[in-house]
Length: 171
Image (cartoon, rainbow, N blue to C red; front, side, top):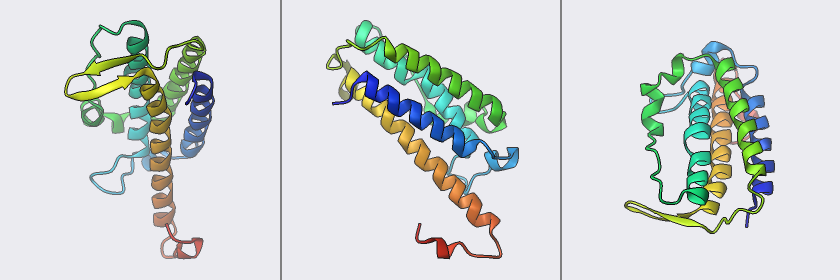
């Protein structure tokens, strides 16, 4: 079972990895999408900022401390276009993500004795425990690390033309 201390260590590590994966991207590279259905690196970072502010931290807090309060609505897929993610500045959004993560880690440090088994019902969804939200937060970062790695690979593949990256191995 994951603890807040373990989750904090993992979230700190993934935040560092996310920062490293975008640190050298140009504005054009940050906005590039491999296809119409994919997100750009900038969109991923903007999404992570909003998730940090409006999703995981809030839902854990509400589950642990105000179980009768409703969850604020979120719409991560819609926010990509509604909030104009791909028009923003990568450096600014990366700084916001890192600042929000620092706040999250400080907040998690106050939850050493939290009851991670505390659960709450959600309309049309299974009951979720505070620990489910915590574990999902860690996994969410990993999903977006993978997404950023796939974007970096696609950028490298495209930049190598007319040469091939096949010798690197199978993707």
